[in-house]
Length: 176
Image 1 (cartoon, helix red, strand yellow):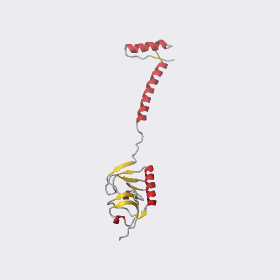
Image 2 (tube, helix red, strand yellow):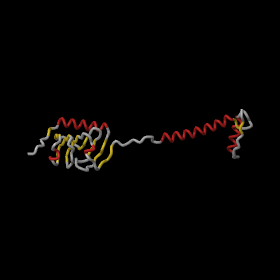
Image 3 (cartoon, helix red, strand yellow):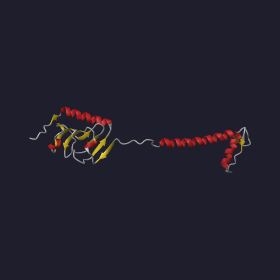
Image 4 (cartoon, one colour):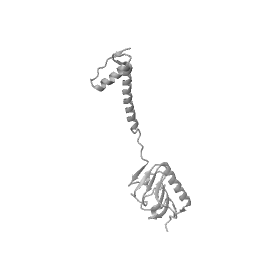
């Protein structure tokens, strides 16, 4: 067995610890290697535990928001748009859009599109294959709204649109 002699500062509490360790050591002439290993292992364990907690507390992945506020928007950003409007104001609709409307400002904006009317529509939104724009007010350019890509919300809006579409009546858009 190897004996190591460590010189420590002469403070009373350190001397007390040394005396107690020396009293329990099989070799009365100094520190036993087992005690040094114990203290070094304890110190390393405390340091490793602190590092593990620090790493564990950090966020490793940032969750991107699935909705965002929008003051400017364009319907052309939505693939396969289905428009449901309680009130349809001045908005340019793509040719491939399906439009379900309760009231409208200008009937000429609806010509050339697949349009139906339904009297019970409440709310304004545009839903596509992978995203939706939910408007806070009437459907008009630069109305405040929220973009969302949440699957549950898109599914719910598609179901609502399809239900009202099936119940709605086809609009006569010919000039009279």
